[in-house]
Image (cartoon, rainbow over all chains, first blue to last red; front, top):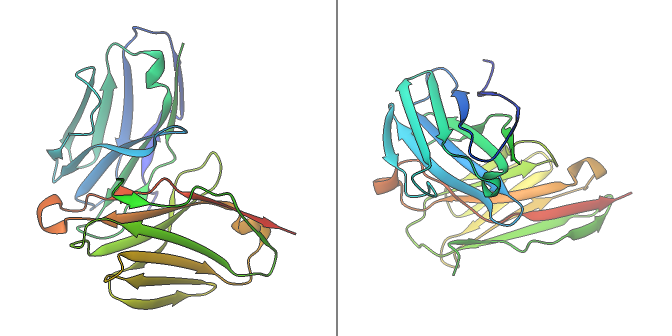
Length: 112
Length: 114
């Protein structure tokens, strides 16, 4: 299996622009997670899905963030409008049931 | 109080020594425990999982779990410079209600010096 795939790997944008991050989980996995990692706050869970349904989005920082999972093989995390404080590495991870979570390579987002 | 706590380090050990990494968690109902390794600029990579009290060994790595003390540790024997990384402890605090949601500690940075 190719593992969890994320795109883009790097994104540089200007404040106020819309940013869309993409994730393809490991085939057959039923859980998908979006995390954000910064030096100050560490690794934070933003939202997770089970069988394409959002289960817990309490980690989403504010209404500027939204996530969708239209099918079992694709998810997006959107930030609109983006702000400099959104600069971080965003990871997508997937798992099968209560098993181990496998992480994608991450998207490094810089908002100028 | 954070739900999963780790000493941020850095923990410095000489090559060949045993590195001991510790993690405490707050919820007694926690059932699944994981150790991830993260190299600088890379994504977290699972190295150990443990579900019951006691020790679990895998090569040079040993995970230890003590649910009564709410404590999980990772021992790395014969430490190598390539083990230098940040080690993240992760806990599934409430699998009955929260599915596979993990709470991560802040990580311990390990430095193995040649």
